Length: 250
Image 1: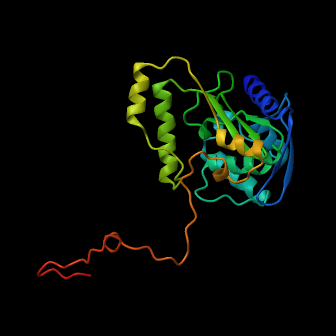
Image 2 (image 1 turned 90 degrees about the vertical axis):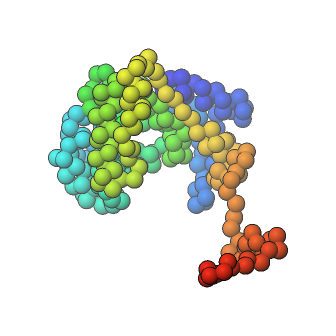
């Protein structure tokens, strides 16, 4: 996290000449963003406890059926609706989006993710049930995701099995068991850290563009013209389809 805020704040200073920028959202909101370090840091579960007024289960119990019932009660208490399926990961993510990400206008970190939300991140070396991961947010949007890579093949398989269970419950975002990946880990992966930044999103903030299409070098998206009938390939080249004998032609 120290490296991230040093890198990004230095980048903004180099590009803009200062640490403050302005961003207009597509809904007309205007955010005054101060990129200067140190950035605010939110520890996920304690912050959710503060926001909801509820004591959450221990970190190593956040994957259980009992916690699922607890989270549903919390959502009901806070008048929040989470799209099905109501898995533990989706409900925690809903709470994070409502009560933590909404505070992240200036660059901020969220850390202390439960393992159930991070199938590829290594378990926390000091707190069972959590993993070594953080995310950076600006203007309520994620710009960085980073974690210690899980290099234990047996733990990884258990995580995939939990993801497969969530997929069976209807969670399309959950992953299936990747046998090739598990086998590769059995051959060995040295201690590794992953860090990824959304460069396009950073450019959006620095150029005050709310549409990512405006900052992509080679965007593939284009507007569709309603009501315009496209010619078929045969019509383009002037060929008239001829049905074969005995075969009805539609």
